[in-house]
Image (spheres, rainbow, N blue to C red):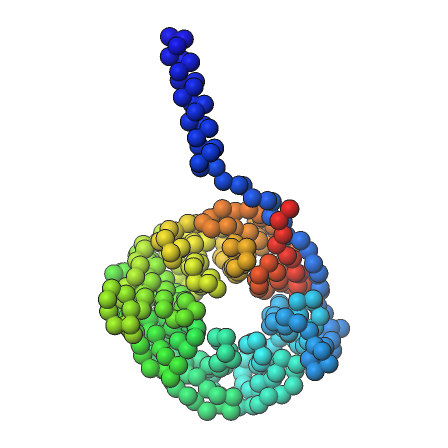
Amino acid sequence: MRKKRFRFFIFCLLLAFLYILFFSFPLGREVILKPVWYRVFSMEDLSSRVSESSGGESGVFPVKLASYFGYIGDTGRVLFLGRRDFYTTMSEKYFINYSKVSENFFIRRRDGNLESGFKAFGYPFFMGSDDRLFVVKTDLTGVSEIDFTGDVKWERNYSSIITSMAVKDGYEAVGVLNGKVQLLDRKGRVLFDFRDQESKIPVVTGVALSSDGKYLACISGLEPQELLIFARGMGGEEKSLYSLYERRKLDSDFRREVFIKFSRDDRFLFFEGKAKLNVFDMDTGNLAGVPYAGEVDGVGYSLTDKCFVVIGGSDGKGNLLKLVYPLGMVKLVEILPEKFSFLRVRGNKIFIGFGNQLLRVDLERL
């Protein structure tokens, strides 16, 4: 009996040694968010500017806060700051700030100087990385692309309300209340047209495009609600054709626009779920969930640290910020004191807006 116990002990010891030798991995250093600077914006800052022609500020990016908007540099210096009207739309170089009832619009450069003006009947907005300008009709049943003088490049009208839209690399995805999803090219021509028949109630609550337009994702239908991903040139088909790549039934039943977007490297697809943020790995097909109460307000992905920042939900005091490593491992949780208003992640730099406050923190490992 003692000999059997001794043999079992030696076996366990040998097994543990082999596991450590062949399957061990480093746990990694502790991740922290290091505060770099913090700013509270007020009326006194509206005259604050840094001249781009006199050396300017590096890493300038657009910011929309609760009451203010502007262009801020990595160091926190202000290139331009303005007070928000009914709606403010911004690109990396231009902005339009307009009242609810307006037909005349003015495009300004990020230093605040006038670029051009135009007349339109609808709501203009910038979308995409190359300063493309669109106008959605006031009843939300049509969208057009215009140039900076107001001339229409193309126009598309629908029999139902547009619920969501995404623009990437010369492609536009449009989701419609009646369950239709369309993919358009830069000239507004239809490349792909789909209407799901699987759900009891057809509706599209969110669309997303990968950076090269290869993948189109949407949240479709009610009873059940599903994630649909379409891919270009799959299964031996012509390179220009799209076909169904992934279909997943979801436990959600959202009747509003849903947060959905691809990571900057297109590796992950982030989308809202029932009390969670879903993370779909495009390489492996794995789906993980990060627990979350309330709506997801923003997600930023760090290419350098291979992690993502999630803001949204509520703990009764303020919005939650979570630092997560795929797939689904939460490394850090912080509480924001006010309602979330802005998130931007570039490398290890994280810019977080809450109320009229803006904070920069850097990801570091101890």
